[in-house]
Length: 455
Image (cartoon, rainbow, N blue to C red; front, side, top):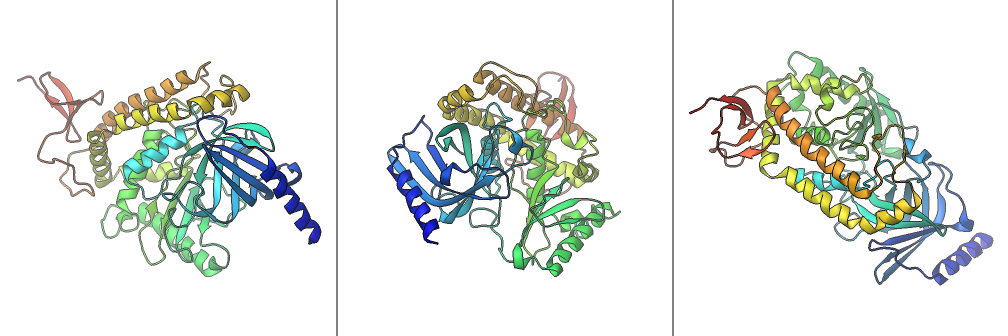
């Protein structure tokens, strides 16, 4: 015990004695492990100290633990990490959680490094109650510069994160893969579900069986002939608003992981399952090698590996669902979602401009990192930002046209009330809002495709 204490005290003295400076205009985080111990895997925590430099403010956090995180991203040279403080820490200030566990995202597959941060803003625009944070830092690990990283929330049941009962609430990840470090269930139809909450002694065998039974019931309801019934069908078990917003966000980002890793949550005494938060978007917004998603919808890609696609296509057969999706989409267009995202891309790319320069002095800007990333490479950061903005604009235009084509005329009450519902909201097939239909042609009028003849 005395030897361990001596090592800790010596380590702290060395850490405090060093001089720490801020590298660029974003904060700089220095992580130093005891005896410069390597972080070798995603299971074993290593003790470290963290020094956080933000302008003239220097914060020192002692006896922090760090380990690897991520799936395939862990095997890249620029590795993502999870850090765990000895006590709850408001690492990003009062508007975010005061929590022990935080993540350090490398964003190595995303040459803009802002796709996950952009999704934080998208989630806020859509009204999700919890959106994982996005704070950029320059990271040094044991004295060596590691690149630009993003501090983000751990997705967990916690105040200012997923706010449900910690003992009884369900936080589940619908996935096509089993995480060995999480308890899991497999439904009758072959869905893998990782159980993030309840944890430890709260996740009894009875509780685990209750989760499985409820999920099997949901599967059976969706497969039944009465699945469209408001009191007997899927709407009696799924929260409509978060379902529709999650689906629209997944299609908008074109995230290939959007149907393979989905967070949902439920209070034990409620029968409604809620969707969110949005997360893991480094391959979104046109950054996947699978295909060009600019003029495609994920739900209709017919990828057998993504079981959730079948569920969404089933919902598209319900007239209520596709009218609700299209109505919400028209509302978001009217609120200016395209300009909002384009402006956020500009502000985020400006925010990271100096730190990305340092990052790409260390890491290649024009070479492949992962086989699953988009195989289009440039020599400048600005070209990647332009690609991102082009995808957003072109994909929004396509979604406007495609959603209207998939929708049908019907008089049903929707979960959203369109603003200024007494007026016509008109878009052309390029997704541009217009005030008149002077020219003969096809228009989208209040979410419905219409042919307008000449006057």
